[in-house]
Image 1 (cartoon, rainbow, N blue to C red):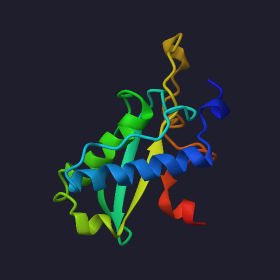
Image 2 (tube, rainbow, N blue to C red; image 1 turned 90 degrees about the vertical axis):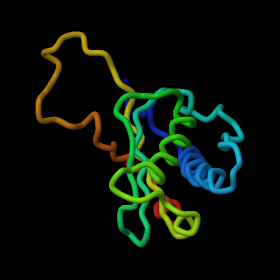
Image 3 (cartoon, one colour; image 1 turned 135 degrees about the vertical axis):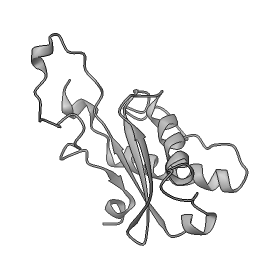
Image 4 (cartoon, helix red, strand yellow; image 1 turned 30 degrees about the vertical axis):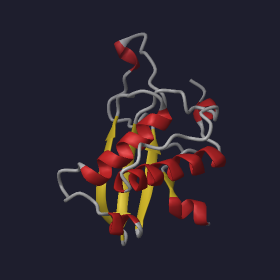
Length: 145
C-alpha cells in the first residue's frame, strides 16, 4: 500500500480530534453520538486500527484502541474516544469536569495488508504499528502550533 495514500490531511486530523471530544461531550449531555458533517473526507470510510488516548495535566487518563479495524474510521474514533475515557480499567471513568481540561490524542494505524507468504514477516520490526513520520498521533497540542 502506498503510505502517502493512507495519510490524513490536516483538516481530516482536526475533524477526527473534534469528533473525539464531541463524542464525550454528547455522552455527558445525554445526547446521541455526533457524526461528522461530511464522511467524504479521505480515509474516513476505511477500516483502520486506532488508539485514543486522554491526558489530564499531561498524565495518562485513559487509552483504548484496537489493531483490528472495527468499521469506518469516523465511527471508530467516536466509539474509542468514549471507551478510552470511560472504560479503561486502570482508571475511574472520566468526568465532565475533567473533559474540560483533558487533551486527546488519536493514533491511526495504516490499513492492514494481506501477506502473500509467511516469509514476508520480519520479526522485530514494528513499522506497521508505529506512526509514520507524516501521520503520527493526532493531538490537540499539534493543532495549536
